[in-house]
Image 1 (cartoon, one colour):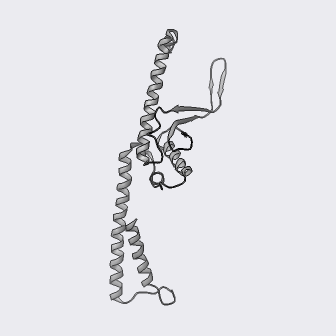
Image 2 (cartoon, one colour):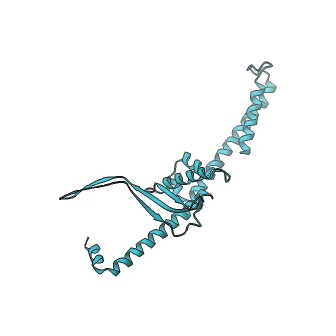
Image 3 (cartoon, rainbow, N blue to C red):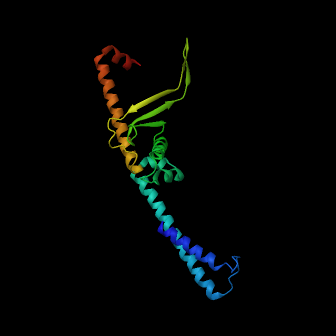
Length: 200
């Protein structure tokens, strides 16, 4: 920000030097005035290039911290990363939902714990489809599947995007593992059901 402010002041200085008494633009003909302005513009170009490299390095560092951000476009990435800690919680939730939808294919929404910014569940929406069998046709309406997270205290969307996205991915994996284990234990309690699953 400081570098861009410096460039803005340099450009304003050049514009002011090119104006006449009545605010009309004029051609700078005096050599001793042209040289300093050229130096100002050259310095401004160097500052812009330095600021651009800094922005690129910042974005790459965030992507290295969270691999899922590599799937996000540059424009969306900055929308997710640049935020004010004191901004409206509704705006923070909007950005959090956008981050999850962009980084987790198949997830269409998230559910927060009350009015807080902690995420407690992921929601997947399935489009209606028709499956034809030999004797009948099954038409299903929109289905919303919800994956409850076991731990919600670490998934706080009010923090840095790359950090809470990693915690969300970790919580999602733990929740899927818990469901898989519970399903396996349920099948062991019903031998007939387990045999049926193995035959499919």
